[in-house]
Image (cartoon, rainbow, N blue to C red; front, side, top):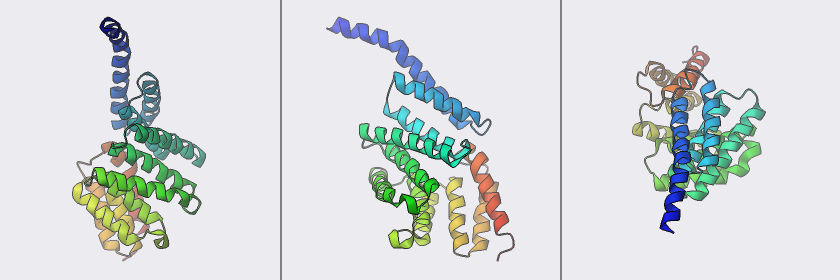
Length: 243
């Protein structure tokens, strides 16, 4: 039996090593998608191949994140977005099933679920709200100082009507807590500015948006370059005549 196990290890080792190299390559592509958006296509395809060779949780989490990004910046239609978020949601859910105490698995499952609902329409997707809330509760219980969880929770509260537990005050609380944990989380700073605009605090909103544009060390360079700078500029333009 020991000899058989040793033989199996020798046979599997090259395949597993190849799979690990695919994952490392995918990580590099994701980190550099701002240089070429097609890097997300390549990263997605690599990770789909990876999971066929080595269906490990870390690979599922990465692929779930990739599908979220693909839906955000590569999809051309709502249908393509929904398909991407649904695939990201499915992969994330599988990661949760395999690793119920992994906060990143719960986070990306909830993130894709939330974006799917936002794209579909909040009122048409309220049935998903309990799932998203439950997943966020789990993330906070496992990792109380997770800034990404605050970012997601804030966006949920910003989208969901107050009658259903949402509201701008709750959203602002999450965004401020998240930014205290990670001041260079520029996407969340843009979202805080959205809250301030809703509250009519245009001077404060401009300050936050300018901080995004002037940030020299964003937590995620690719997201900052492709998404956050664009959103910040659009919001600044929308409030240029307001005081």
